[in-house]
Image (tube, rainbow over all chains, first blue to last red; front, top):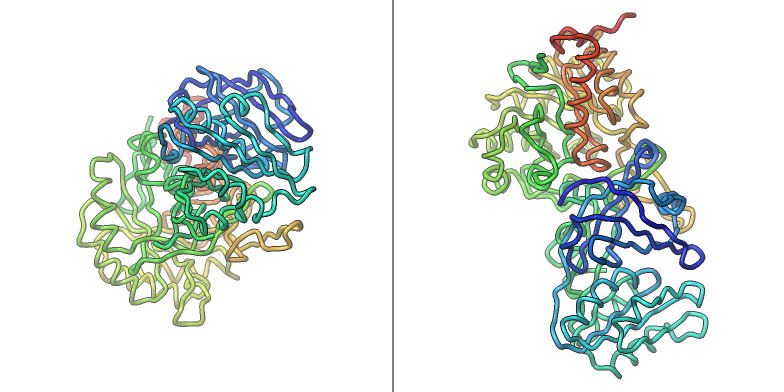
Length: 245
Length: 301
């Protein structure tokens, strides 16, 4: 793990407000599913001292991709970056997901949180898993399912707020219908609480406002039955029963 | 070229160290070479373990950050037993930050730290709320600052640096009390109490509601404090407030600080302190300066 500067290869708006950024980074080649990186941009440190954490979306040889939604000042700035511009990368950081072979898997993603499960889905597929993606979106405008997600999914079920299919009740029924071995989730505290009440082995990747990303500053605290843990170092991947939300 | 400076009896190979709580003694090992730093300062250690504040504990604001971690730590005994041994092979002065909620606990935790090897000095954090006097920070009162520093000095065999709170009416008065109680040096200063809210969620951005402001936003504020204390009292000062670059560090040295602490920027660029040290060397080279001590306090008024 180290700090290094890299040139952006592409930074395309794949859907209104959603961007896919790619850059070359050899040090991230061996990053494991669930690990994350933090990014800062040269020259903006005075205004934006905090690095922004991102889960790796896809690793293709030495090309690494992140998929992000423009929500605040940082991602807005990132969205203006052009190929050839440089970004400062720290990573890979944090723990990784526990992996299973030849298992029936559900990836349960809410909004852009689904992007944090893509790299995992790809790896699980290679381990012989059967993968169902349950993708929860506000409406079609936030549906980020692309060819990559399709490439490792045996089935994709989209649920949306607009028609009410994204309700916990409905999602629970879908999960029970599939009866998976393991569920991985990201992007919704509501769905996380639901998983905590279900009988399935479930993991979640969490995010929290973060300072150093290295485990030192203790700002990204998450409550657990054994006191506060650090999202950046003890996580970001947790067993859902391990966290108090 | 000489970069080494003295903070009382403590000799540093160069004037750059981290601010307490912004840098991990073990977590940063992979990203920065400790042997290049003047010193490293631990996160604050209290007598009893502390759970810390509810999240969110950090928020970015214009040109700075607010934090309210709440001195989360596993206590002085655990520090001596489990944390300190991991530092023993690292070639750098270790300054241990001591914090507490009661005067007597400062003494007790210093006693525990005295029993251990591998500590170069103590930094007394007086910005914690004093539970015995209703929760205002020790560092906001001359007498409470005196009491805390005295209780540490009574048992400490190592240099005692006192990190002052800037959230006071007259920091020079408080500095005088700290020095009267035996402080060997002062760190000027801690973060400024602030607050930020979120229009969308209509909630405070910090779980603790208020927090300490740090980062480039505070540099002019802290510079004024360093200057005021330096003018009034003859004591080594470690300046801490908003340092991003070698130039920022040099400015503090020029107004009389003997060393500097880098805080927020360790989050932004975890290897920044090495860049700052290199930048200081470059400045000295360009200015044909042999000894950094000739530059310290060279401000003309």
